Length: 124
Image (cartoon, rainbow, N blue to C red; front, side):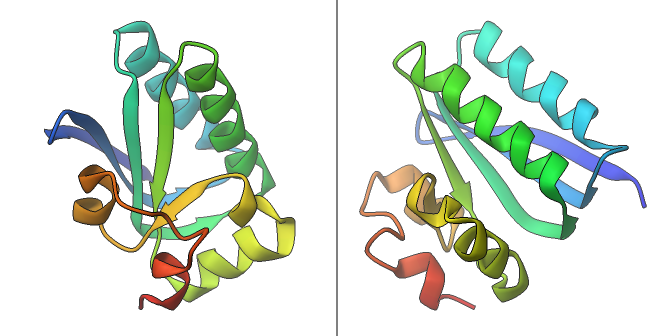
């Protein structure tokens, strides 16, 4: 399956909508897109995983790399993820404590509390 990427701006946040599969074959495309956003000056980035059907360890590595890159420039990376199968991956790997997870783009761009408190984990 192909990877689809599209960006839009919501409430001062750059929202990257991702669809398809994020795996060893498509992860480099996602990585390049995220790097381009940061190098283009975006500091508040939201990755919407709502249409992602598959996410492997390579994809997780790209997301962690983007988080580190944004933190290095005083930016912030938030993830929108309400699918239980993907949330399970974040919980099993402990990355639910690393990323700020939201159930919706609206919640992520509103600057409210993330799923560290649980909104995304209970969404679905």
